[in-house]
Length: 228
Image (cartoon, rainbow, N blue to C red; front, side, top):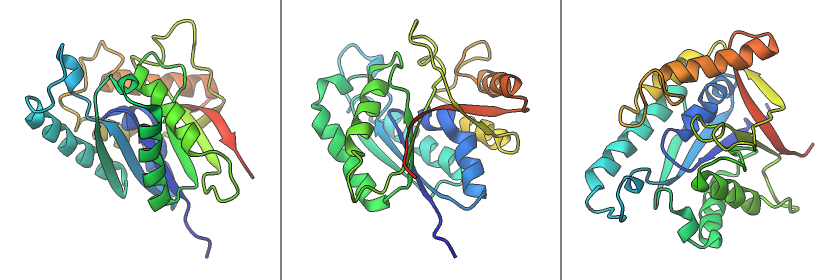
């Protein structure tokens, strides 16, 4: 029996992972893959003028609870949470972030990585992408053979004119409900229905990609690298 493929989702903030590829990961898990999530940032402290993680400790812990509930719904094995400063990844040496990705990658030995699109508006998304690409240099012993970038609502589409141009389309008609149920766990992050980062927005986005590809619901990705 062939060994199951291992997936690692590397996201900057809590909820990025589900917004970006939640339904696809749910589908791949149903098809026999094993998935893990790495979230680099705490996702809260950018709301203050000066970062004070201690004053936001309760909110950070609450959000971590939402992460675990959300990822459990789609079938992820474990969610690994770090505490990098929200929307301040550019205040850190890139090497420090690369080493976090390398450490997790060494433990999981993934075959496939999903991560952010390199031209997102959010600086943490951009740096997460760079860290992943640096940590997965195609050396002889590198396990990662496929890397895909996902879009995140209210970040990817707002960085005009660097628009998202996907070339991989995954039918998620049977798992879109799991994605939406998972997003419901992020009660502090999701917005009202007229916002791109809302349950309605997530459903409409998947339906829009589906209309463009002849399917009911689709998640779209930019292929970064595939080695076969």
